[in-house]
Amino acid sequence: MTQGETLFYLREIHTHWCTSNISTDKLAELETAKLIERNAQPVPVVRLTSEGARWKNSGRPQRAGPGIGLTNKRKVFRRSGQKKTAPPLKRLV
Image (cartoon, rainbow, N blue to C red; front, top):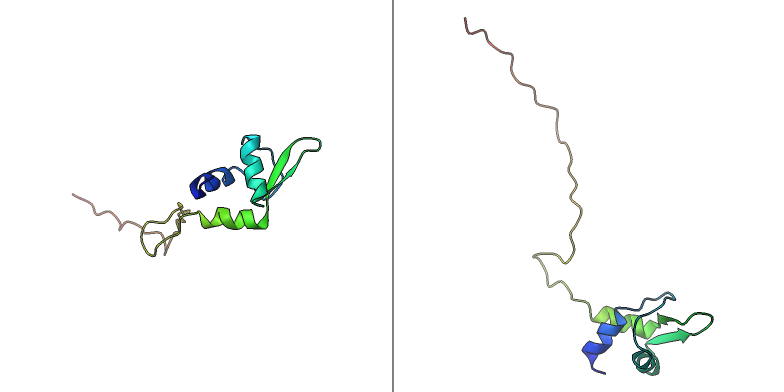
């Protein structure tokens, strides 16, 4: 399995026990590489090992400095100063 395939399959697996849609032969390959742990009782579940988590995090894109961020940050709107009031109206007649 190539590094890209490994990262692709590791995206589906978490550090906590969960079920997976990955085929059993791919899970066996990941288990022999000591990237995941399997538990078949009572439901077949898998989780990442510490080495698997390191592999998964190494495949994430890194931000290369200033520019567009990889995530959308929440915009905070704050009211500044006092409320502006209109000047009093003048009579036209």
